[in-house]
Figure 1 (cartoon, rainbow, N blue to C red):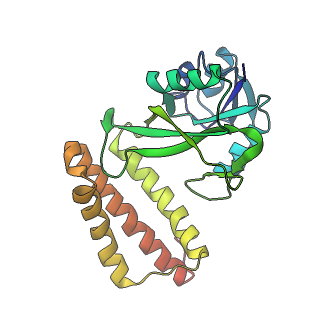
Figure 2: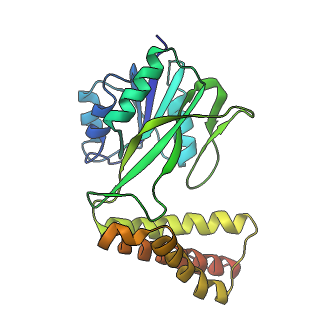
Figure 3: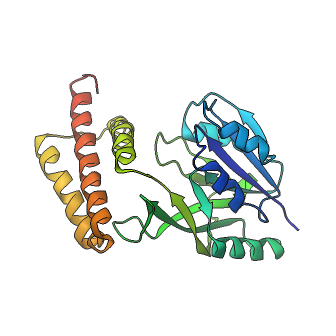
Length: 254
């Protein structure tokens, strides 16, 4: 049977990592964790679960994930974030592929977000296809500052697997707002470096358009109160990104 190396990067993930590791039982033949010197119980939990544990200073999501992949010893890599876990159905479909010796070199599946403990099935957040299982020699993580993706050799198409990858994202709305501030900076820098520019009209209009699309066209309204909060926060994220790009235009601090 072809074996799988599950690979995870962590930083202060004591609230999430045990759930992630437990979901890999029966699927992964080894679990590799590269930690960025957590100061909570992340390391202790990982060592208790007998994973292959390494520590490395964080230089970027893609860099850290590629570094972690270098420790994987098996043919297929299954890459998860610490706040993700495999649903029972996804575990079943991956196991069936594994028992068949893997019929493809690349696999993708949907990711389902849990926001403040509730499933979010709209807002443009679902279905959210992710490529997370591949034959190690065909790809690696790209150099994106944010929302990194696996770069796959040309001509290789993924097979879709049933079942969801659970994403246990923000436990509180405050956590979401904190990440918005951080990620809007990375988005602004990325777009500015791609020669994109903004102006006052975009700062006014784009957040409104973002909310309208997510809440009405992508049916965030069906996710109730949390759907409204998510769409408003997405609009706020767009506003911050545009403002920070404008600051970059003026060579000012963001």
